[in-house]
Length: 118
Image (cartoon, rainbow, N blue to C red; front, side, top):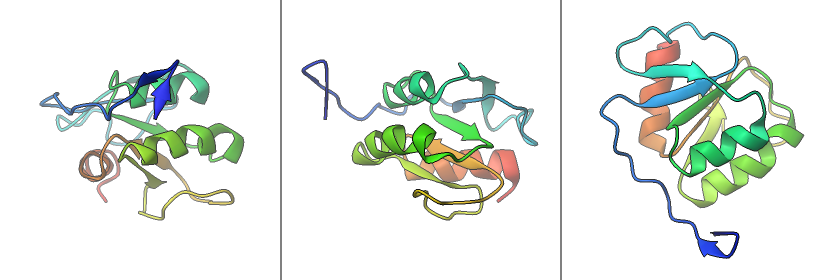
């Protein structure tokens, strides 16, 4: 995958405590296992920040395909995971309470456990 003609590699996981972003508070965001900041309010901004490694995971309440399909495709092409908090892989028409996106499946599991205990 390229961005502006430059090869884009998967971000390297380098934080001891994963950093995530969400627009609305989530149950486990005070957990010592992860650090959570407020997102930038637009999936068009959030997903590029995730894909370039500025954050390690994202959490959303809305699951509109126009918000998540473009970024989710880029993320999964680079080895990341996007799924509902209960583990159902995301696709157009997915419903659920929360959506999680992370740079690796392992980070997805770690953040999901910390935030939702699942």
